[in-house]
Image (cartoon, rainbow, N blue to C red; front, side, top):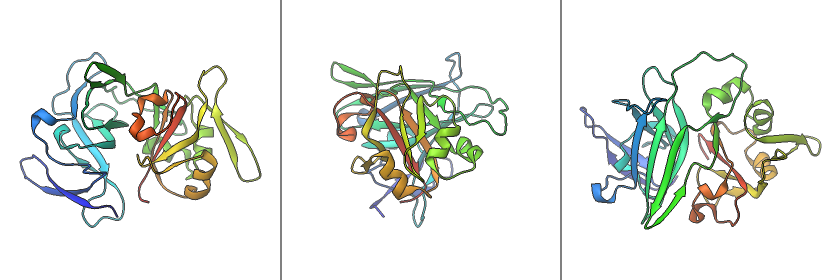
Length: 257
């Protein structure tokens, strides 16, 4: 397990929580060095007081990643899977890349909770404006992103990512049989972008970039917390993506590794 760094949650109970570093995934920072500026509002853009922010990470003594409450100024360098929530609204889950020397300005919009058919699996469009500000350079960090969260994955009733993607609507991907027991995944015609050669990044780790078939072979029975389809791959900064071009990438987040 990666080295753990201690953080202090700024709440009435003043609890101390230990989270994994990736590197230094969570660490209180001076306000001047905060890497993430966050605003959470409703579909009209009106602020939602007391909206929640959670990070998916390890806690002390834990074997699996969990959701823990954090504040924006606790997040350090890395790609972090975050959950944004408020009572009466459906939570939204997606990852945010943070790097030293740049700042991300993020405005998230939550939709009211609406009942969904029990068998419907749909990759939700991320309703957020996210810009990385690096000097005079501004970069979109959302990249036409769609996400299958834990609730969507549970509806698919399978741990296999190919079967999840076959069931899901709105991914922009097509899944076709390849060889017995395996499948081939590509972007749909007309997208204008191909799937990256090393299309899957596991748990936001740039050293764990794999082809789709290799990922399916290694992690076919893993429990997925979220699957992100990033249509425009340049939304992931180069230091994390480590590839040229603007091809589509999948970020898959697992409970453990």
